[in-house]
Each structure stands twice: as structure tokens, then as C-alpha cells.
Image (cartoon, rainbow, N blue to C red; front, top):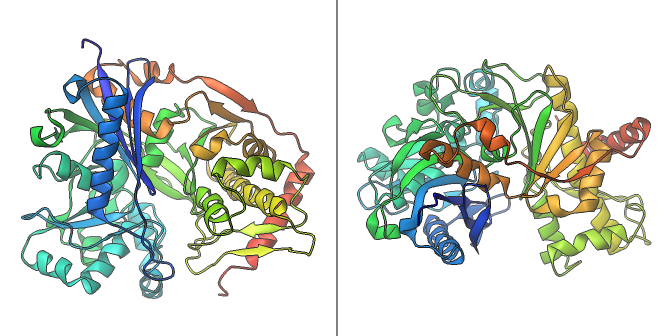
Length: 497
């Protein structure tokens, strides 16, 4: 074939996906394979690294088959991945040393409390742009060091390799030849100095992570390695890596003041660019690195994280059995005019921004004998929208230019009722593109820029197309009242100080 095609690997929290993308940004073929999550104890979430790899290979095979091509027809690979989840493996055998600890996992909350009591929080925030929370990779690795003998043994023998999921996939794709990561993923580990763009020796020591076990950090657009012929049947350059949320920001072409994107996946993640100079958030948002083409000139992004969004819908589907398919929640919720006084605070794994309460737990408030499944379904959608609306408000107070439009993506972005709620409760227009696979597209665009399919980020931005625009329909006073009610409900589940 003469057409240049990109393979994007989109490794997520509940499934691994792959897309073949052409020069017009079109999805030519896709594959998706779910894999199990393990919950050994309350608040613990784990993945089997071998299953992540197997599901990724299966998704790649399906995408290539759906596109009616062979692996030899691919010009490059881009990778995007769930962030903060950590994998530890043996450099000699290539075998995982333990299950991966997932970003949602809260087992290290007591360790965070210890570090906070010891006065470590300010230094960590100034260096990494992150708050001291179990969400990030560092405390997960510290837990492994003290609770997984195979990890400690490999570290002592100099055989330990650790990394986020992108590093694990590149290691496997290259046949163990490359141990690399990119700026966006490194900046979510709580081990990386975002000001100097390098691993921080003191933090590595604090969290019991040998610096020799960490990956080489490259820009998001870079030669990360070449696939082993024995893995994909071709030697294909891996030219882009970006954590899922930064990849979505790039795929949504949100580069101007007043633009932000919100991804509706397992959780919700609101991101906006924050310039070329690091600044501290005044509203408990995070500062991370965006997808950059060089180490020396990183772009900073501001981020707000909601830990539970799509997983709330899954819970209503799988545990409460309110409906058979996730997509059915829209019609059920639309069958009632309001939630009937029901409010859901879905703090299944604590609360993220702006609360950062690892010990908070979920609640359904306002139940009466007249509450129906429809009321609970509507309250669930409102919870997702209200959580994100709080982040919009925080972002507006934190950045010099307030958000003027919110571009949305992810599975739940297809829910028209939720998108209208989001516009109403955040007070800004919500723009849904024709292609909501922007997380995968972002990595494809980054790889395509590197291989020469597109000449510039501006050309990539021109590929973005609007599907539907949702305008706010409620008065500011009603919006403020809704947010006040929401905060009162959240206050009921916060850990007493």
C-alpha cells in the first residue's frame, strides 16, 4: 500500500483497544478486548500485566484485520494508556513481579497520611505539580517494595524494571530492548521533577524506587523503539506515547485560551493548557506536562480528576441491575423530569479534585418510598455532570482565561441528556466532535506528525469536526443552587478532620 497508516494502541482501565488511522484522521479498523480487574480487598484494584499484554495483542490483530491490511502496511505506532497504574517486572526474564496496582487503588492512603504528617507534602507538590494522594504511582511502588518480596529481591539484584503501562507495552513490543516512557506519563508518577524534566533523586529515595529501575524519559513525539518482528510480524517504529488524558487534549485540538476538554471514561478528567511556565494551582487542581515534541520546552496542563464516572453507570448496570446495557441509562433517566430529591456521591474510591479525600466513601442521599430506578439513574448522570462542573468552576478561578467551551469525548459523551446536563451545570457550551475516540486519535496524530503524514499541529487541528453543540439552558441562580446542594451532599461523606 502507498497510503501511510498509523496504528494506535489505547490501553485503558477496563479494556485494550487498537485503531488503524489514515491520513484524514479516519478510523479504518478497530479492535477492543476487555480484561478483568481484581479487587483483593476493599479499596484495592489490580490488573494482571500479562493479561494487559494479551488483550493488547488481540486488539491489534482485530484492528489490522478490520482494516483489511497487514502489519507491514503500518507506517508507525502511537501508544496512549491509563496513567498512574504501575507495573514491576524482571529485566532478565521479562516476567511481571506482581499484579499491576491500578490508578484507582487506595491502599496507600495510610502511607500518604504518614508523609503528610512528616511535612513532605509541600516539597512533593512544588517538584511534581501533584498532590500527595494514593492516585499516583510513587506510593504504589513504595508499597510493593515493602510488601512484595519478588520486587525487593529484583531491586537488590539490579534486575528490577518499573513503569507505567506504556513502558510495559513498549518493553513487550520491542522484545525487551527498550525501557522508555514519555513526559506526560512520567509527570503522573510523583517521582518526576516537572520543572527540570528529570527523575528526582530525593523522591526516588523517599519512595524506595531505585532510579536504575525507571524508564528513560523522552518527549511524546520521539523514536521509542521498533517492534520486534516476532511480535507483530514487522518492524514498525513506535513514534509517539502520551498518557490518555494528555492524548485526548491533543486529539481535541484544545490549544487556545478558554478551551478545555473533558473525557468521560471510567472517571472524568478535565484538562486545559496552562502555558510554558510552571504555575501552582490555587484551587487544588494538578499541574502536569502535556504532549511535547522536545524535552527542553514542555507544555504544562492543568487538570481536575473525578475518579468515578462511567464506573458509576457500570455499577448501576452490574450490581444494582437497573438496566441491561450502559446506553439504556439515558432513556431511563429521561423518563422522569428530575431526580426526585435523590443525590448520589459516587466516592467508591475516595474523592479526587478539589477534595482529595482518599477515605471518603459513596452515598445515595434523599431516598424515599417513592424513589424509582429512573430517579437513581438520573441522579447518577447528575453526579457525573456536577463533579465535572465543580472542576470547571475551579479551573475558571485558577487560569487567567476562563473556559469558554468544553470539548467532550469518551463513551458517555454519546449520552445527549448527560451532555445537556453538563452544559447547564457548568454554564459553558459543550461541543461534541464527530469522532469521540479522541484519546486514541491524539496518539495517532502525534505519531503521524513524527512520520510526516501531517506537517504541523495546525493541520492536525483542522481535522476536528463538530457533531453537536449543547448550550446552557438554565439560569445562573439555578446552577448555583444545584452546586450548593451538591456540595452539601459531598460534605456528608468527607472524612472528618
